Each structure stands twice: as structure tokens, then as C-alpha cells.
Length: 222
Length: 222
Image 1 (cartoon, rainbow over the protein chains, first blue to last red):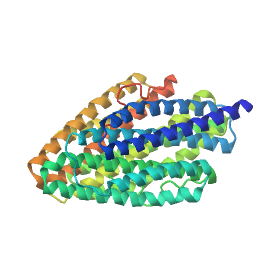
Image 2 (spheres, helix red, strand yellow):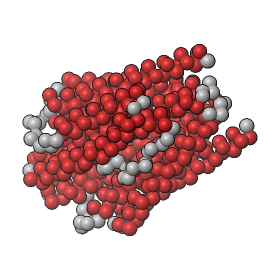
Image 3 (cartoon, each protein chain N blue to C red):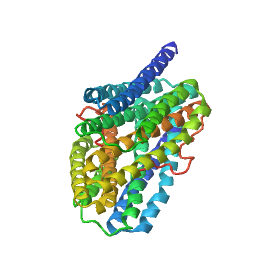
Image 4 (cartoon, rainbow over the protein chains, first blue to last red):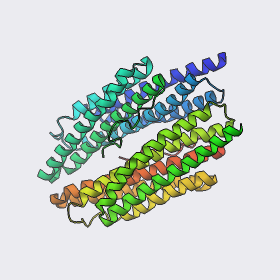
């Protein structure tokens, strides 16, 4: 059992390591976008393999723990860790998408549009950070607040997409840049969506109650 | 143990029920798109809650089984089932997105563009079906073939997106319809991506080897 406890603490430690990598990937992708930094964008893309490897390492750790007949509370922690891991791996994929679009955007002059994009980026990054804090601290009130905040982020994303669509219609020469910014906006919205998923798992871990889909329009907005 | 075996068979049965619902959702969304059928599109959206509920039911079943100290092979099946369930729930979300965009597209005359979209839809639906068959039959060769096919589907999606971008540039009055078709194309690509994930889990279940990320560019294309 001591061996089990040690492995469980390793799982927790590695999950936090993965969380910091995922958070860092989004932060750097957003910074690369803001500063039109090709090199940083390229680095985000290259470093995504670390998250892919951590996902597999954590799954292996989790399954090794599940094989040791854990108690109910530990069992919940292990399955929650597996779900959070998957969300963090996808957060890395979104960061990679943002980085890829950033490099395309850097090939043209900056477009004065999607003025709310920095706000969306700031909120998505903060939601991810808060969701991971809620998971660590077990603060389910904070976790539930994130589920509500995700709706506001969805609305912000829709507003940005509508604005970019209008810009395209006015000036077709902006279409490529607008499409790249749309992908970035959707990726940031999805980062917030993963943060919401992590928050839902934090609530489940603490209260053993599944709050997924208990709010209207569970499907992510296109 | 007999009780365990019974619960395990229920998990398998319910997973196949969920799989058929997910497959059906995509099939109907594609049919609604092809036939410009608002009513069918609306039905796809409404029925998505069934997949949401099945996801939660299956997670609960799986965790109940994990609490009974399953043998290694059963343990793999249970964790694989949890991952496949999550992918099927997301397939339902993509079907809902396609249905939503179909209803928007139906408000304007049909646009003669994205001629490869029916092919993409056909392939995505077939990949999902084949992935589930590979999971049930344990045919890992078929599963591995799907991982390769996913790259072709990614390329087809990129081709469609490029075509739609060109159409937009030529005629701004087509922008709204092109954007809706882009979302549909990306959703179909993502259905294929989930099919690939299911195929990877099928290989893991049979061979206890994790082939995720073992192929280049693991990040889904934007």
C-alpha cells in the first residue's frame, strides 16, 4: 500500500507538470500572436510532443494504479486524472493551432480587427489556470463558476467571428487574415471549453457528482 | 465475479448502443445537409442529449467495474471503453454542429462549391463505422489502416477549405455560405479524427501497446 501511495503521489506530481506545460503552451502561443513572434510560435509547435508524451505516461501510471484495487476516493482521483490529462493534451493541440496561424498571420501586415481577441485570450488562459487551481484546492465553488464563465467566453467568440465575417465582406483582400483570426478565436474558445471540462472533473472528484451536460447547450459552439 | 461479468457485458452492450447513436447522428446530419432537410437537422440537435446521457451512464458503469479490482485485460477494456465513450460524445457534438450549419445553409440558395464535401462526409462516416467494427472484432490491422486514412481525410479537408477560401475571394456575397461549409468540413474531419482515436484504442485493447502520437503531426489540422 505504501508503494501505491508513492505511485499515486507521482501521478499527481506528473499531472501538475503536464498542467504547467499546457498552460505555458497557451501563454506562449498567445504571446507569439501578440508580438508577431515566429520563433516563439515555432517553439510552441515543437514542444507539443512533450504534452503528447506526458499524456501517454500519465495514462500508463493511472492504469498501473487502477490495477491495484484502489479505494473509492483514490479511484475517482485516478479516473479524473485520466480525463484531465486528455483535456490538457487537447489544450496543447489548440496552442499549436494558434501558433500555426500566428506564423501565417505574420506573413502579412497586421489586421486591425477582432479587437476583443486579446480579451478572449486573457480569459481563456485565466480559466485554464483557475480550473487547475480548483482541481488542486478542491474549491468546487470556483469550479462551478468556471462552468458559467465558459458561456460568456462562447458569446465573446461568436462576437469576434461575426466581426471578422463583416470585415471579410467589406474587403476581400482581408479574407485570409480573417480566416486565420477565426481559427485562433475558436481555438481560444476551445481552451476555455477544456478548462470547463477540468472544472467539472474537479467537482466530481470532490463531491462525486457528475455535473457534465447539466447546463443547456452542452455542444461546443462551431 | 459472476456479477462482475454481467456488469462488464452491460458496459459492452451500452457502449455499442452509444456507438450506433453516434454513427446515426453523423449519418442523419450528413443526410440533412445533402437534402437540405431542416426538420432532420433539428432532430439531430435534439437527440444529442441521448449521447450526453449515455456518456455519463457509461462512465458510472466503468467506475463501478474499476472498483471491483478487474483483471488486467478487463481493466484495459474498461479504460478503453471510457475513452471511446468520450470520443463518441464528441462525435455527437460534431453532428450537432453540422446540423446547425445545415439549417443556416438552408436559408440561402445552394452554393455550387466544395464539390469534395460529399466524399469527405462519406469517408468520415465510413471511418467511424470501421473503427467501431475494429474495436468489436479486435482487427488491429484494420484499426492501423484507419490511422493512416485519417491523414488522407485531413488533406481532403484542407483542399475543401482552400477551395472555399478562393470562392469567398471571388464573390463576397458567398462568404456566409462558405464559412458554414468550412465549419461542416472541419466537423467531418474531426469525426474522422475521433474514428482514428477509437481505432488507436482498439489496438491498445488488443495488443496493450499505445500507438497514439507515434505518427507525425499528431495535432489536428485547424
